[in-house]
Length: 129
Image (cartoon, rainbow, N blue to C red; front, top):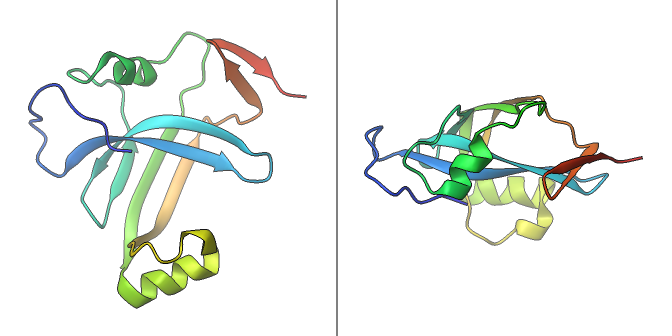
């Protein structure tokens, strides 16, 4: 989901912030982080430290609370698949998403500081058993 900025961005027209949801499909747990995205079809994602000029809820998601591990995300597209190659890839790995005429970014992703065992509720952290 792309987030709207309240002022003009000086980082270029291909720069935007997005909400990235990381899902552990075996436990059905998710964690959402805000990352900067550069590029359009061949995207690059990186963690950010601040979100000045964005809406308050976005700034709040970016700013880390004391005692909370910071999630660091990095992704660089190495191969871009479109048309038939993208559809074949989607049918193989994500069949429920087939037929959406999407492009597929293939590359290395690094995620550190992610703890899907901790479930956040109303600002408190509970440890799942």
